[in-house]
Length: 121
Image (cartoon, rainbow, N blue to C red; front, side, top):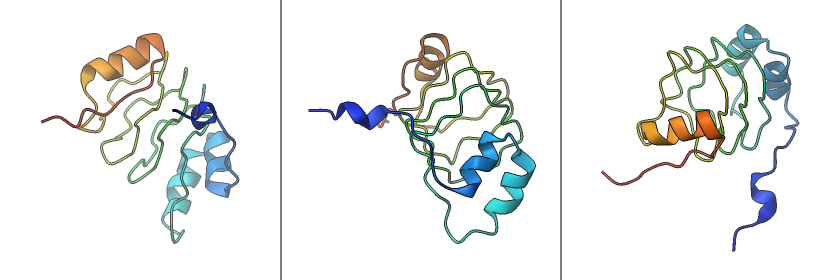
């Protein structure tokens, strides 16, 4: 049985998360190279934020909420996005992980569903 608390948005106690919440993407991109290990941003609340220019390589954004966020041009191809929701987000120019089919992206964008990876080849 699925844990109902598994999909709850949470605040993440890490300076890099706060930098993103403050929409200071250049500072985040600069600082991420100076940390030993990136924190998990799973279940993070990124609703309505302008994250254009984000270096999303190797970020765990699973089950995160991006409702209404400006994600234009972000390369998410090496990010973990399973379970994330992008309802109403601006996604022009985004590159999504290969395991995310276009139907999943469209359903999440239009209806707020959580994106599921398709592991079938």
